[in-house]
Length: 68
Image 1 (tube, rainbow, N blue to C red):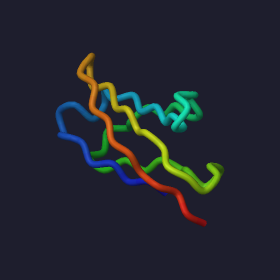
Image 2 (cartoon, rainbow, N blue to C red):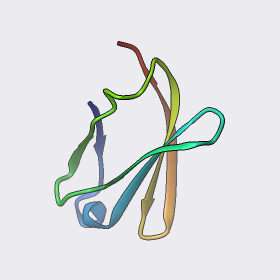
Image 3 (tube, rainbow, N blue to C red):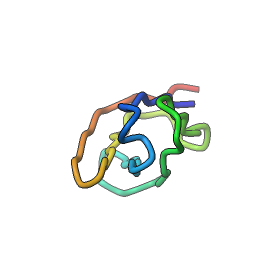
Image 4 (cartoon, helix red, strand yellow):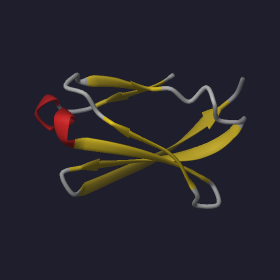
């Protein structure tokens, strides 16, 4: 699981997208009302990915690594 913390007032508006390093979108998830959201990445292969969060039009991104 990938855990993402969000400001409480923006959590319900956030859409997450996960991309591989070639830029292909692999996963899309919508935040629930919690400050901490979990995204199941167990189906992703080992490697490095980019998480993009869209909070009401404001984009934030970061890399993360999956190792099984």
